[in-house]
Image (cartoon, rainbow, N blue to C red; front, side, top):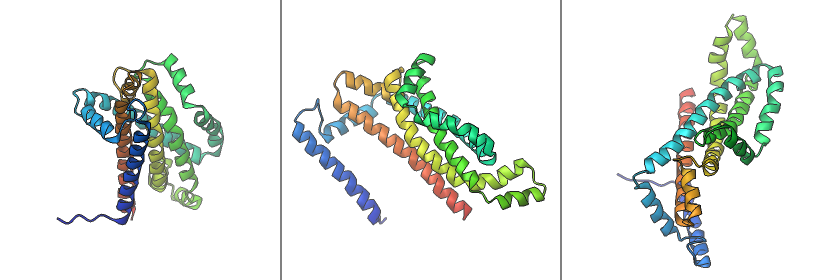
Length: 251
């Protein structure tokens, strides 16, 4: 079977190789694994981590926290976003809240959450607060972009609000929902890891990162970071695949 590599894929591969080369040069310059280990050392450490007995539990719990935070954010974001897009007064009411949530430093939210919740709930709470505004704002903008003449026509045909929302608004704002979900997942994933680093639950990628930092195990710290990056990339890729599938379906 012939495998073809596009020009875009070749450029992406070249970018990855360039980053590895720069990493290697920096490691040779510092000459200390306690400052910056060589790429091959970090990769070997990563292989040891993913083959360890507790890796599935550690990564699985972090993924579960992310999914719980994302699902709650998605439901609230879509529901409130649709209402804000339809009703200008409600949009004016909710906008200052969204701006405040987006503006508050994540570290402040985590420190407060450490007082309010147990260590395992903190990352979920942080994920909710970081992902919800992105989804809600995108959905609101999507609803505003719907042609008001279509809404008037639907009302003339005595279509109820349930039919208008499900048959008119939802299909029209689907690209906005997917775009908001993609952005939210990228931001939220980092917030979850930060929450785990500071709250130190029993299991979690952030907990492992903090432990590696305490014992100056820099290659393990970088390895866990790479694992987190790959997981984030994987989830974003899934969302993009869903977007491509939706575009084909609409066509």
